[in-house]
Image (cartoon, rainbow, N blue to C red; front, top):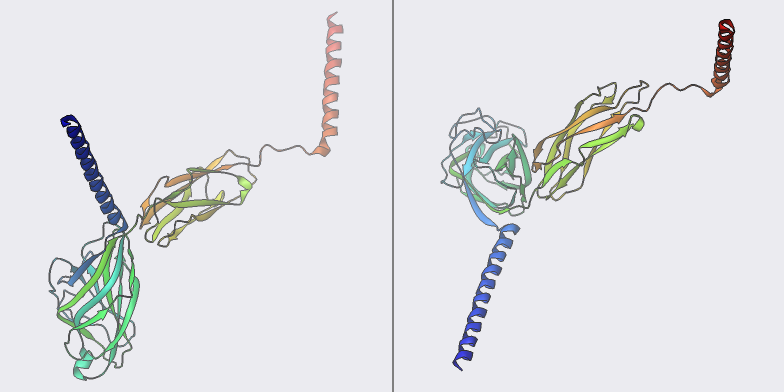
Length: 368
């Protein structure tokens, strides 16, 4: 009995241990699944003092926060501090759609990041309305990202308000979402809309801009590469189609530049140079193509090559192969003899053979 009891206790203990291990493994797997799916996190950004220099190619020559400017003010924002910026008066007189303020995160994303707007809060004041209170003017808020000196908007919200006082306002951005590619920075841009006066300037007071968003790790962006390292064609092919693939993921927009250069083939005599940019939308993993025109000359020559190069990939990594060659096989060959000339050629050859035979006979007679 004791042995049986001990055996049963051991088996029960083993089952408990196995169950515990399974629970731990399943829990860990669940966490990994949640992480890979992208856990949303609420993030608050605050506008900071500074010139906004080196914010993904954006710089400002209009002074630091707190100074008046006649055009767009570009300043940083971060998640580590409270608001510490007053922009002063911004924006020139007149035109609708002029940007007053561009606020850019001072930290780039390390991976593709899904952004969903929550709201923006601040104390925007219309300089003209401060003089003539009670009028309504419009502002447009664009949420997006900057990369390489270019602002890309996910979407915008328009609001008409009485901006004659320093009242703190909050504008919902919940209708705006998008994916910021790896290496880019979150940004919000403020535009003038529907001006009702010729003097149309705004300024943001201290503690003026707080941006709330949710962020989640995006999917894998994948890599961009040529479909082959060599493309063999005949000289009379006309156009050769070059395929570029996106593999390993399709999260976020992506692009890559392509260009041809001389190998042993030289343009424009052997081929027509080609260059440009191929683009993929978020979720797009379809192959993209470009063409290179091959010139069909009449020169007898050996095979020649054209170099292909991919470069400047954005939103996805540059895969392999990123370089390749087009090998052009000559289609001219040696000059052919027209069929109509063959009878004459045969007659000449027969005559030469006959002459040779007669000459040899004469030589023999002379010798004997």
